[in-house]
Length: 226
Ligand code: PMT
Image (tube, rainbow, N blue to C red; front, side, top):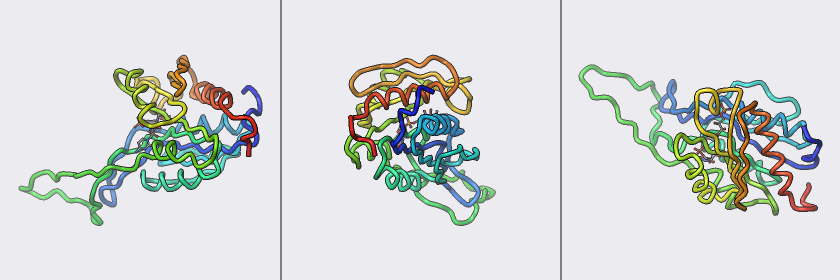
């Protein structure tokens, strides 16, 4: 920890993975454990921030000193993030958000019936929360940080995603066996809209989180503290 450089700042962090229900017992989900988002929350508290952590389906205990909101789906996450972002100095989207949800919810458990074909699940687009927050900038000088988990052409895809989403920083982490989803460790390159690229070597998710806060606090405008 480098010091209380986030004192007086309100940071909003999303963590975990959204679940999009198909019926009362099934959902479309992803492998996010929430560990990276929680590491961001713990380190932000340690650096003096007021932290709102919005978590989706992590099952992790609340980090001391953070206000924790719980959501399930992408639509619920959007509502919570937009509301919390209204007075935030920083918004960090570390959650893995489903890009699509089933177009229909079956109120009763979907049954398999002899002689019938497998059911077809049709999907509709979910809102892009990060792009919306970045376009909105509900507070002057607000800093918006996204994450991207990529499997191939990691940096090329990351640079394209940074432009498309319109955020200030994009943390690009490659999906791998002992990093990114589910593990205690991560490795990343933090891309900035001004072209700066900061590699973060393999290590605890807290170390990556601290690098993100270093880059964020270096971008605060003077006198924009709440
Ligand atoms: O939770 P862990 O197990 O610790 O794993 C951490 C992590 C891998 C989940 C995290 O480090 C990470 O990379 N999170 C983003 C995952 C991802 O693949 O995001 P994406 O490429 O689908 O989306 C890019 C960005 O847009 C993300 O900031 C995402 O939160 C945001 N997004 C995406 C879709 C959508 N509909 N709305 C969004 O806001």
